[in-house]
Image 1 (cartoon, helix red, strand yellow):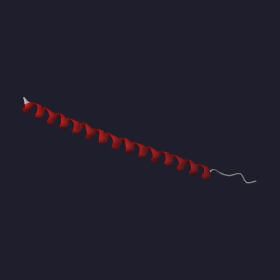
Image 2: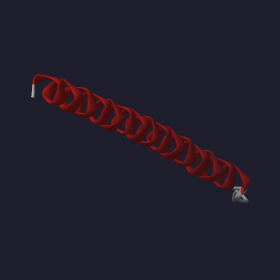
Image 3: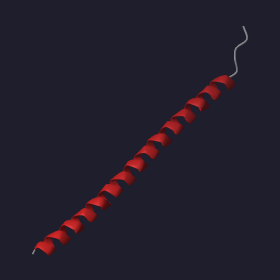
Amino acid sequence: MVEKTAVQREVKTAEQREVEEKTAEQREVEEKTAEQREVEEKTVEQREMVEKTAEPREVV
């Protein structure tokens, strides 16, 4: 009975480790997604700046 409990504990520990690894992987994905979103926002801002600069200006 004691041996079975020890084995169950090891299995739970292994399962917990898998959950923690998946959680860490998910966190990395979320961080990369956030970084990608920031890059996209900066790209849009740069594109808008270029478009503003490229607009013909009125000569007074």
